[in-house]
Image (cartoon, rainbow over all chains, first blue to last red; front, side, top):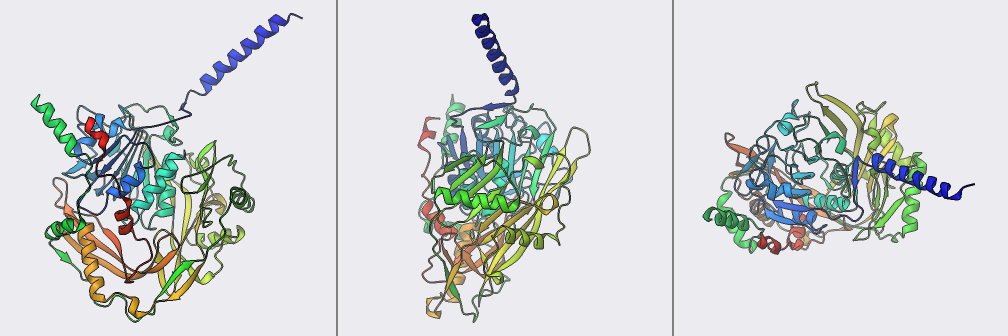
Length: 241
Length: 337
């Protein structure tokens, strides 16, 4: 028997196996030793304590940004702020599709209308809006989706946006963000960790919601799916009630 | 160039700076929150009730093997076999067991107290149809109690446990131009604790049961340490006048720039700090109305907080955590931007 041919054949087999693994493994980018980009944005320095819950999240990481929130960070300058980060965490006041920053409110239905576009055309994967009522669910609005995916909306490649569709308790916010950050860091699936944090640390009346591009449903800190197209209109929302 | 400099200046102004001494902030905010209404009677918040404080009964800390055994028993008694093959100990001591094929599956246990969160994983619920044979809202509490009994997690003192909420987890899909669809995925039963006739609130003392297909256990949170009570002497309590004063102080701090505040609720509860202390406190919920976005006059964002009733509280309250959190005054690295 020609042993040389067997070796070559084995090499071919190995090459084919590697090729197969590359093809099969394509849907997900996995990085073993990961250090993502995290940013924290404090909605207010004079209305309760939004500083500590933001700090309790980003303190789990070697964070990149830590700012008092201003509207430009979410709209006209987002490529250098929220969209420069992989994970962003905002704490402040809110109402459906709107968040309150230091100087003014941001209308998320139109925040993607500037030259910087929405979130995700640069780096953003996950944005948490820890504020009352921002991520409206079908319970509050039959059209819960088009505010996110309309041409001026913020879904421009971002994978998941997390928040509440009810009021958010200020007594619990530090504990929720602390636990959520620890779970994200530990590699848990992102929106699922958000809901666990609310079940574990919330006051029982606040209910989480998470809107996302469906293929990103299993994303975690280390492993996430490929970016959605900027103009997609395919959304899922998960919500506690 | 001027525009560039002004942009840089604007960016640097937003670098995080923590407000100075709280007394200064309070004084400023007292002027801002100028319209405080309080239809809730604040003149006798404690009443004649004889109060108690509670401390959790110390338990022997679990080691890794014992934590794994707790998980194994839970899986066995729930007839589940999720491969929790990855384990690590987080900063702070929690053991976390996870599954590679479903990153939402987790067993997260605090070895010092035995409190845990178990999620058998949500991956199997991501298809676009409702979960079969979910229990109804009326059936769910009884089924949840049954699951607690089967897994050995029902609290020893059945009089302390009450159902506080029955809800669930839903998913909806909007796809291109099709009509959006909604799917029911889990039913959630939340249990709370009542001690000495008072509801226990705060991060401790809770059980949350998630039920899936045919009412099987899909997830369980158990944070329910056993406690020992101690009577509180009247002399250890704050006066009503002092409590009322502290309610307004905290309201001003919490509501900040609100144009109007309105105390909706102020009630005597027990606050469980999740660190071994349960003690009486006043829980306050207030409406705070802020100047809204354009075309919206005022937006109501409720605020809530606790005011300790004891002159020398031992629990760690949220406002104390804020004081102790000590976040940096600003991020040094932002100067380079």
